[in-house]
Length: 341
Ligand code: F6P
Image (cartoon, rainbow, N blue to C red; front, side, top):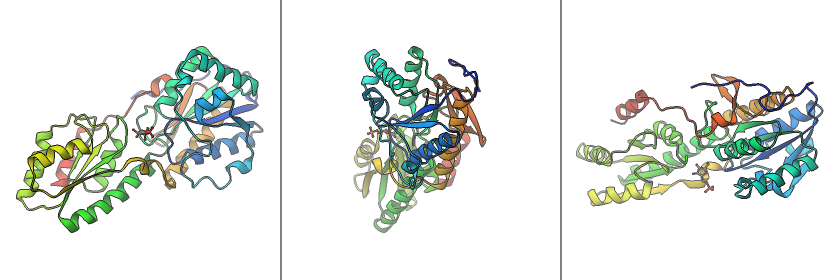
């Protein structure tokens, strides 16, 4: 997987304090650790003598000029909080020429000379289009529970979301065990299966269905049949919401059709995976990347996302991070089958 370290792609800063005002926003689905990232950006910016402007509700707030000068106290006591104090949105208007023009005009009016964008795939898709038209230095931070971006081993929020899913699935296993039940648990991840894969392994799931591999439903049914024959009464199947066969409801329909006598239930974990206090790993990741992003911005590294690769901060151009993902190794998939047997 190539990681590019680029400098001054669209914009060159002649001395490293040409930027005096920066804007920060969170966009797309929130993820635990976004607040820790905001705190790191605001505190680092202020330490460097910059004015930091908060942009509420992502690109939509940028269009509407929902922008305010931040104080260091605005980010006090937030490192441990889920959600985002800047709020977030998915803006359709920003995808129009008129919307982008309004957003740019607002940045100009507020004197914002550089941006820190925290979000996922949609955020960087928007950024790429915007920066094709307008020159504004910007550095992105990967804020998404899905971990579906190239250029970083982890995204802010992923670790917390997986831990939330693990806690929930462990609880489901308790009740499944008590009733000798089969459970199909659906986790988030959009088109990516990392939450399913990691929570499934961590919970000892009997089966894990992910979008990265084609689901053969007959194999799934065979494994249930096999477990039944050897009197393994509890069967936990973790399915990613984006699996090619379908989510928990679809999988459950087929199971009920083939095994009407099996006591089975399904559970869609949903948005609880996006909330909650970030884990230490997400807080540290967010802090490191937020600090690095501001340093990069004032030193002229722009139009890139800051990520973590082999525990080193790296910078990848926005257009290269979109819809990337680390391939799931065949070894990992083989291991799941062995451990669940
Ligand atoms: O991208 C984060 C994510 O939580 C995905 O896992 C999920 O598919 C999607 O957002 C849900 O979006 P919304 O909150 O708009 O329903």
